[in-house]
Image (cartoon, rainbow, N blue to C red; front, top):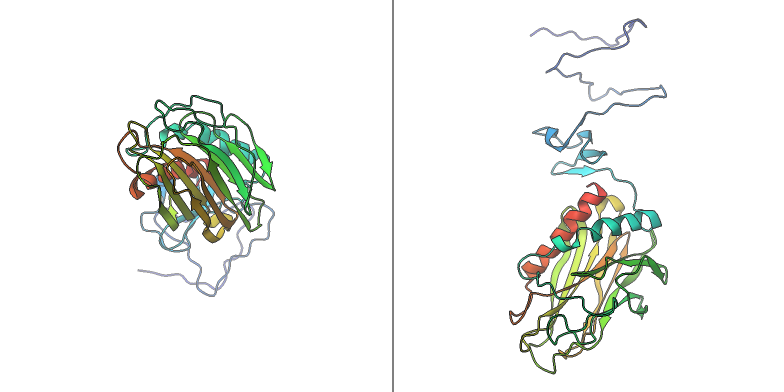
Length: 321
């Protein structure tokens, strides 16, 4: 095969405008070469959807993905988006996220977490939920460094407590709320619950499970999740379960000093109390009230993981990852 090697390529006339490389060929610059562009325009990256990614990429490949309108690069093992810096604390960004997730929240449950209890009382609590469970239970509060806000009304809008912004996703099954702390600030915060479950001293003994510990889920990392099986198997009452999740992302520069800074719950099946706080930077925290139905026992790790994964799949789509 013939080769043409030159030290410089000069003399391209103004009327030529471009140097073309035929399809199937590469224009390569050696290890000591550089690309020196001094105009005020832009560099056109390879552009296409996710399906058009190179089949055998090498570390450092970069392109523009038209599915999420993000620049992405190949790390050597996965494609990563160059997303904007963490800005979820911005009111507009936070409200947009809440609205997007509220429209999808009833799709996150799967077998084991899909009992659709009734939201049958005031929007800050559940009454009987089709049976005698909950009574005046499920009061939810935001917690910041050990102090609690007033009870959340699930039909409310964005509020701020001790610098932490939070919003509910509506008074309908499942009850979900999301909170976020100021940007680039290590903050200890989360949620708690209180009230009377109405188990009348019966049913199974409350317990907790670690769902995720500094895990990668749907591209988010670190993800920490904790679940409390609060009351179950008392006559025909449905299980009461409290889910708490801290979510970060590599593109946000997230860090979690302790994903389980404070975890606590009452050992009595009558008492709805549980508390979760993590210490994080550039993350958000979610809580949800879940149930797996009547007289069927506790929620398992895998069942809780399915709910969290489904939740984060929608979050992933919203943020364009």
